[in-house]
Image (cartoon, rainbow, N blue to C red):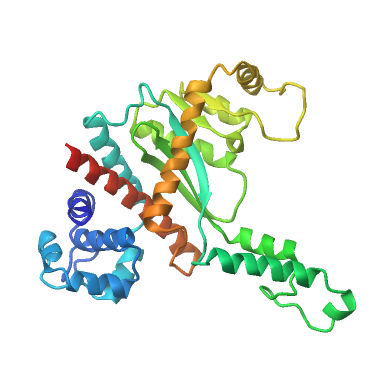
Length: 326
């Protein structure tokens, strides 16, 4: 059960209470388990509280007699989900999978990819109608459009301006995945779409510290000579990155490693390893299918924390599946 696994994991990482002067009604491990359960079922705080009230056997599993109030869960989210604690949880999960010989990084590569989440739930029909109305407003005569002042998000707003505004606030999650088991070894979150290349260094270094990475594969978004040097010369990891960034040209790249990649790509020499890059997309698909593609938080900082919690929930679900099969 996800609730029990999250509770036992948190007991190894978190202190009993956040402060010696707190009420000590619930431990941080119990609250973390409740937050993971909420994310697992994609519930609001109020619905998570009601679910726990209706499931006394689940409360007993983590040593509770009463369910935490929804306000308690809301406050616990900010204090528990912090980057240092998330990194310690990823360290522990990587050790558990390595001990069980499930990472398989000796034969399978580390795969990197990024994805964006919706700021709030929007149906596909609503999105389509919004685009149609914006295109229609863009095609109106200027004399008609100038009579009414344009507000952000209104139908009269430029299509490009609206797109820029949405992309600048879009939550983005980048992950490094052990392609043999879909465990996320490293994650990086931010608000706003942009190049993936600056995330490569942090993702690879965090994964390299947690597991014996031999090969890393990534798409053209991570392509840069500096990233190849970081992987191959600094960490001794073989990097396979599609050299497709920039304008299309028949010339070979000027950098040593990018030129090496372009030649090998033409010969399809790394086809077997590079084909495993899709496993990172599979991990993103698992997160969105199981927990949704839209976030429920309203502020940029809480959206970042919610994406990190989804990463932990995904890994805990994998740990539960392995325990069941074992």
